[in-house]
Length: 151
Picture 1 (cartoon, rainbow, N blue to C red):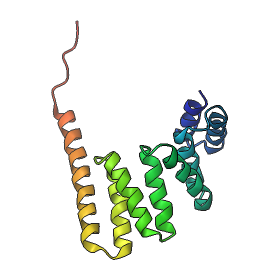
Picture 2: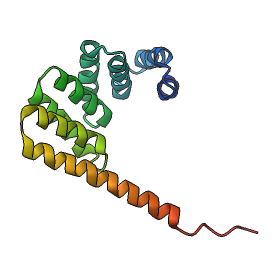
Picture 3: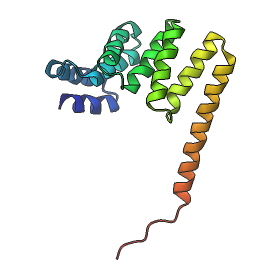
Picture 4: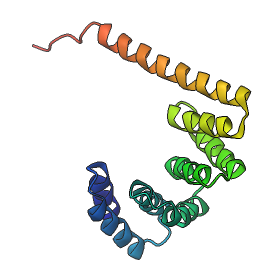
């Protein structure tokens, strides 16, 4: 219950309330990786990467399937110029959900910071491809015939 409430508060950008709920969830379920991930994200939004890092690290240690924790971890590690670790975290996020452009974008930015132009361009191209596909899907849905009205 606490995790669900925390998530709703997080979605509404009510981070103080979200933090209380995620922390309450951890008292009931200390192994809840998603709660650690969202607490880390809240610290990032508050511009406290030094507080976010141990929370995000704990999240991925508990569950290596938490894509959003890997993305946030990649961002923190990039800010700390720990590029090799950032690449590894972001590559894991891409592996978990290759159709999401955010991890590809972050990965492109890390490669750019490292001076790896070829890899950076490859990832930026993937971001464009994913956005174009999303636009095409939306256009297709909008141009499709509406379902018949039931009588």
